[in-house]
Image 1 (cartoon, helix red, strand yellow):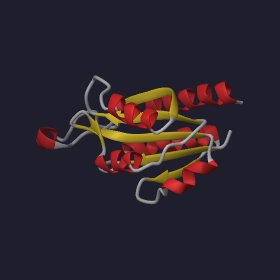
Image 2: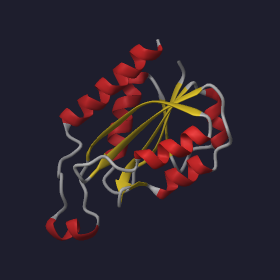
Image 3: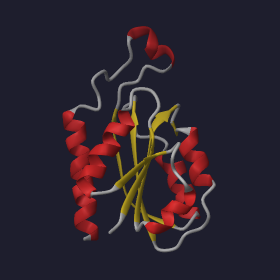
Amino acid sequence: MKTLIVYASVHHQNTEKVAKAMAEELGADLVSIGQAQPETLTAYDLIGFGSGIYGGKIHKTLRQFVEGLTTVTEKQAFIFSTRGGKKVQGHAALKEVLVNRGFSITDEFSCKGWDTVGPFKLFGGINKGRPNEDDLEGARAFARGLKEKYT
C-alpha cells in the first residue's frame, strides 16, 4: 500500500519526530504541510495527517489544507498528533472534515509533546523531552499495526 504522511510541526518539531518514526516503519513518503500539494494525494492509498494540538485544535495550516481537498474515493487515512495536555483533542474535527471529503479513517494516534505555548512558556514548558523514545516506539508500533492491516 502506497503511503503518504502530511504533517504540520511548528514549535519544537514534536510532530515531525512522530511523523518520521511512522514513515520509517511504513516506508511512507513524508511531506510537511508547507510542501504538500492536494493533487499529490491521488497517488496514495493510505494518507496520514498529523499536527500538534493548539488550544484543543489541530494546527490551522493542516486544517486549511484538508478543508481545501476535493472529494476522494477509496482512500484510507489516519490521524496523529502531539499534545501538551493529558486529553486527546482536535481529532474529531479533523476526522469530520476528512470523512466529508470521502476518506475512511483507519485509526488515530497521539502522544505528549513539549509545550511552551502561552502560560507554560513562563515555566519552561510542560512535557520537556517529549516525545521521548517510548513515545516514538509507540508511534512505530502504531505504524506496524497499520502495515499489518493493509499488507
